[in-house]
Amino acid sequence: AQKITQTQPGMFVQEKEAVTLDCTYDTSDQSYGLFWYKQPSSGEMIFLIYQGSYDEQNATEGRYSLNFQKARKSANLVISASQLGDSAMYFCAMRDPGNQFYFGTGTSLTVIP
Amino acid sequence: NAGVMQNPRHLVRRRGQEARLRCSPMKGHSHVYWYRQLPEEGLKFMVYLQKENIIDESGMPKERFSAEFPKEGPSILRIQQVVRGDSAAYFCASSHGGGSEQYFGPGTRLTVT
Image (cartoon, rainbow over all chains, first blue to last red):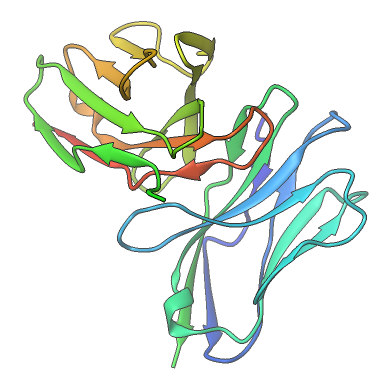
C-alpha cells in the first residue's frame, strides 16, 4: 500500500508568490515523522523541514512551512515568496517507528520569472 | 563540517561486472541508510545499518545486493553481476540517532551498459 501520495506531478508558480505542494500519508502508527526534501537538477537531496506526529505547532523553517493536518493525514509544504532557485523536485517522506522512510513520487516545481 | 560523502558520483559498468558504491556519513553520525531512485520515481529504501550491524534490509533485493558498514571506513553497497535494470541513482543518508532526520549524500549514478 502506498504510504505517501503526492498528487501534483508538476506545479508552476510566479516568482515572489506562495505555493503549496500537497502530500498525504497513510499510517496506523501514532508516532511518526514527516519530512520534505528538495532535489535540484544537480541531483542531491536537501532536507527542508520536519514535523513530528505529536507536534501541535506547524513546523516552519524560513520561507518553508508545513501545514500539518493530522486528522486528514496531510502534510503540505508551503513555500512563501518563491524564488527562481526554488525550481526543483520536492519529495515528501514519512518515517515510521521502525525508522524506515517512505518517499512520495515527487512534485516538480517551476518558478516563473 | 563535511556532509555525507559518496563516491564515485558516476559509475559505468558493463553487464555482469560488480559495482561498489561508498558512503562516508557525516561526522558524529553512526546510522547509515541506502536508497535507490529509478528515473522519474521517488527514493526507495534499501537498507539501514549501524556500525558492524545491519538493522533493516527489507528493501534489499534478495540476490546480488549486499551492504556493510564496518567499524572503520565507509559504508559499502555492493552489486554483483549488474544488469541494465540496476541503472539508477543510489543515495546514502546518515543520521545521528535512529529517530533523527537523515542527511543525504549527493548520490552515485550507476549506468549499466
